[in-house]
Amino acid sequence: MEVIYDRGKFSEEPTPDLLLLGDGQLGRMIIQASRRFRLPGHAAPVLGVIGLDSNSSAGQVADIFYVGNVNTPADLDYPVARAKAVGLDTEHVDSKYLRRSHHPALLFPPDLLPYTQNKLAQHQLLRKHGIPMPDFIDPIQGFDDLESAVRRLGGKAVLQTGNAAYDGKGNAVILSEADIQVAWDKLGQKGLLYLEEFVDFDAEMAVQIVRGRQGRNNRVYPPTTSIHHDGILYLAEASAYLDPTAKDSAIKLAQLVSKKLPGAGLLTVEMFLKDGRAYVNEFCVGRPHNSHHWTEGGAKESQFGQTNRMAYGLDIGSTQFRDGVTQATMLNLLGAKSAGKEVEGVDEIEQKTGTRIIIYGKDSREGRKLGEIRYAYLGSEGVNDRSEGLERVLEAQELLNNANDNRFKVSPI
Image (cartoon, rainbow, N blue to C red; front, side, top):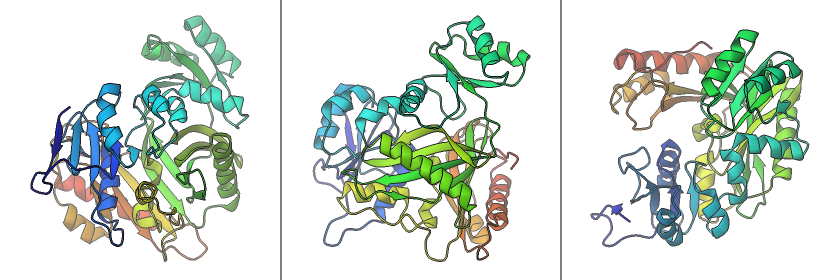
């Protein structure tokens, strides 16, 4: 396979201390965290990526890039065998190959990957374990099936595909009889379908648990409250003064999922809160999660740093808020139109607003995740006040749009 590395830095092909499967923004941020991560008495780690484009988000910052498809076993064999530790940029990898190999360097549970790739299988697994979740009906094999199932679920539901359902793709909300035909026209030819009860939730939340390389020494990050638009995360907020009932309900549910689905690595549980009770929406294993990007700068150790700690055999770091921080806010920068990779004015806007702006190095297109704005701050003692963080990230977004011809989508909050 083609292997690309910096010949000015290495005299021969280096051995990756950490190999990331996938070349997107999560791999980029793990690598950037590793650059700040120094082991006493050790040389800087070698960070590798396997993907299709060496000029991708992660490829731009990697020490070594393997040109290959993460869903092709023949492309995985060579880099995985060489690496000292293997992490995920994406869960959409060849799970059959990784489950067979059970390579000791894997920083994630390969047996759970099929359930993150297929949301119907995930729902069936959660139901088998008695995890609180919205009711669902499967399979939906025709329009008549859909009509009947919508009636059984009270007239409001969400039609979903089992595969490739993420970031607003693969689902259709049904709130009226007219929506049934619209949903079927959108997804009826997609194959594996199921219908989920529509939850008129009070809040959407996510809880991330860091599970040590041997599945021990688990630690829990503060819950994140999130706002989605068109199925894509737009705003994520964490507070040291979150309502205790909501906090306890969310953490207990995430811990229950972790107990039922053991394994090493990051586990993020997304959930709905309704009348003080939490219900699982979905879970993600093995990779950082968009809901907890605020941990970089907001927590004592970020989810990206935790991946590095696991790779280098260190104890899990603290998941508590960084000293002095009681509130943390993150706004996703979503593309509003097609444009290039370069973004103007970042340094000046950071200085003016006190925010941290992260750009992923991607060409812009509508709806694509291009970067994020973070703000971690000291809130009023004992008060869950989101206003300052919200004002800062929205101001930074407005200034970025002014400097970049309205490249980024603005949505209501």
